[in-house]
Length: 437
Image (tube, rainbow, N blue to C red; front, side):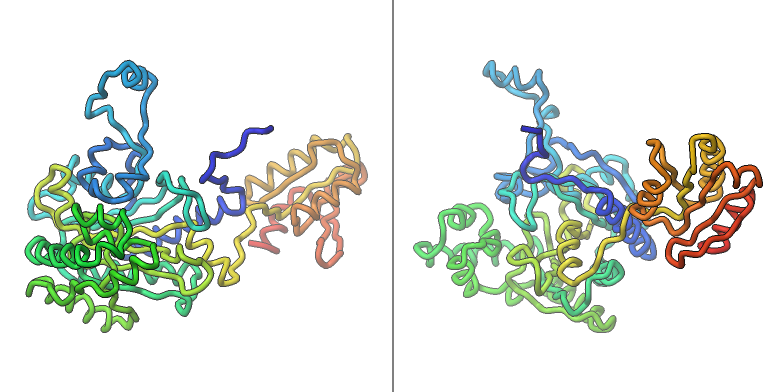
């Protein structure tokens, strides 16, 4: 049996690979208008970064991270030894922690500096059970803004995210934006205690995982996909009823800015996202139809304490990530077709082998002029070359035979109109530019 891609991964074949490139380019274009610039961080980081940054109690850290072990360290483990902390490495399950680590390590936000606005795009890895909308290797595009705590940064990011989804082709009518505030270190501990007490009162109605979370971070229970747990947690205290004055004012300011920008949203008090580093504003965009239970296509929030968690100075931050594969599913559900990777403006067909060298030269001249050009490299008959040109979607075919070559010309055929004209070889690039470019 032939070797196949690992379970939970998939190949991006040419059409989709082209769309992924355009997807990233669109993100760079839209986010660039807001001052975001590209950064690339390693796909592998010290495991401690994710433990401290994301939170040990999260499913991402406790269940889903892929740990990378070198052959030498594997042997050390099998022999009963230990691995040094710096050698404990994991494939990144998300992008924020690595970007914040880079900001701290390279001091990209020195005292008094303007915020660092960064964007990234690339693969993430989680050891999840593969299903529709969930893979073990998936692609994300995200942004991080470090060094600004004003609510206008929160609103700006949310608006930017919605502008991107619209630009990439997801209908606004098919999306729903959810917003919430998770409070801060002043008001969240008391709220967490309220939720824990509520969960203890309903312990016999909640799953074992939720009760385990109750001891470490009870807010994680709001993420439980068990229908009974979700129904129980729907009656839990709402964080928006327990915000401190500063958080309440911040949340109100974000909503006021969104209202002013005409961005519709739904307040969802149970929205906590899946990671421990969030503070204050959190948001998520869901698709109404077409994705089933995995309907979130993007989201994020504020993380004002994350830089300190990874060893930096206090630096407020905010970011979001959007899933490429889920966006693709949303586009397919909306009937949007992917662009074709294969394109051919001109196919040069040889009547016989005597003209191949001249045909090869014409192909190169056209390519140098910016024309997508192909020719046969397998000795096909002229009839078969026309079939190949049609398969490639060639708009024009330049037929070159001994008679044409003697005149220093070719027969240029319009494949759609079935019209032909004699064109000098030297004029073919100009003629193609006149028609197409």
